[in-house]
Image (cartoon, rainbow, N blue to C red; front, side, top):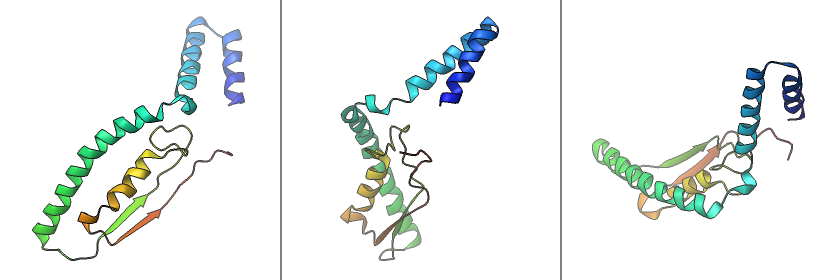
Length: 130
């Protein structure tokens, strides 16, 4: 991150006005997108919960349609969660409160779906040192 700021300062001091404005815009954009500590998790959770309810209903309908269409009642059902990429810059997959991952597990744990197993594979973390 320090390299980015050094580059931007160099451009601001030595380059044209138009490029300077572009760098200022990019810098403000970087700062506005990187403050996961400022996120109101309760508001974010309530927004995601309303979306979850809709997605949950649609997913249940799709599963019921597949079961009836292919006559697969009683078959082994597996939920595969892949590559959640928990990080500090994603609001929905922030490592302190991974909303998407929580909702995926919540979906798989519904008793009326009769899911037999759940596996999680792939990249769980970001490449940051913390």
